[in-house]
Length: 368
Image (cartoon, rainbow, N blue to C red; front, side, top):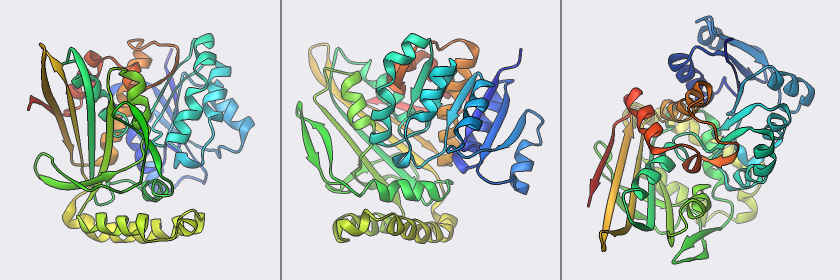
């Protein structure tokens, strides 16, 4: 019997990348959803024969429930996740259907993790944060932590060139992430950090080399300390290429009045302006992504540092590989772990490395 995968938000840039990855690596029948009738691009996407289109708004709960009930796996790509509740996950658990998402916000991840016991009882495997960051980045950290007798510090840095090949939703996510200070796990206690603060120049692989990154609120800020209890510090920093975008974002985070940044109309304005700008700069910056995981800990009685790096030419495609690979393992029965998990607690390092190799994703590892 053919597996059936439902991708909510599957007509967006990231959702369609997830769909393409699954079509490449599985034989599943794929249904991709959007809120409006199909465009010519969508019809081209579905023309391979194993994809079909469904007009669906997440507010149409009865229609959503019916679509989920007809699926073996649901993948939630309908961001930005700041605005989402965990209703899709809740329905999946009720229907006994496995679940993935590409969520990237603390509030949503917290809501989803509260359904852990219900998912265990229902035998449903649900994995959150499965894109590129969070997602592949978290699995890189797991690999690096496993090199130590005791890991002590995690430093994650992300870099996106231009728009990253993603749509305006990613712009919204960036500006929404600037609205509030957040808690970070530093020196064994939770401390308040200001978004887009404490610029740090980090050495990424070519072509990005030394680039500026800033504190950014990500779900792994709190899921990694939970997954790796010996770790006393988790740092998550993000930056853009070209560098002048970083300075504009810093101004937005620190100069604009907070009350203005917390208005949805302002977020929409900034997102559309930014998207227009990246349409121009993409031509010379590219749309790639770089991830750098650096873990400090004890190895053979001595303190050591281990680093992993990854570069991909298209951020949206890389995100599709992250979610698609976990979908592949769920459908093949290689991954079965009832409950709601962040990716670093669900996916073994062996499976992660297998997935990256099969997709031509080259991760460089070395002791510093």
